[in-house]
Image (cartoon, rainbow, N blue to C red):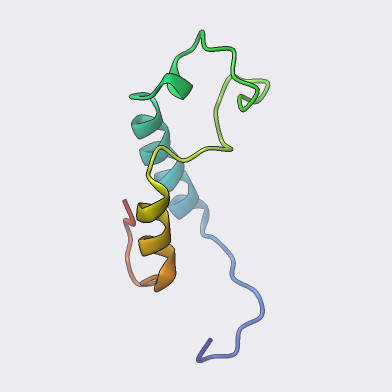
Length: 73
């Protein structure tokens, strides 16, 4: 915001790291079970529409993001 940016682009390595961590955490939930038959799963069976973290956790991490962090979770 200080730089008046209108677009933020995610680095491919950062997205891969985030998704890897999220999917590892999601595996510990019912949504991560291969046989749960979730409509959140894509054609590969990968859940990408849910987060395994609480809403409060999401809120606190997105309220004032630190764009210098390499690892949010």
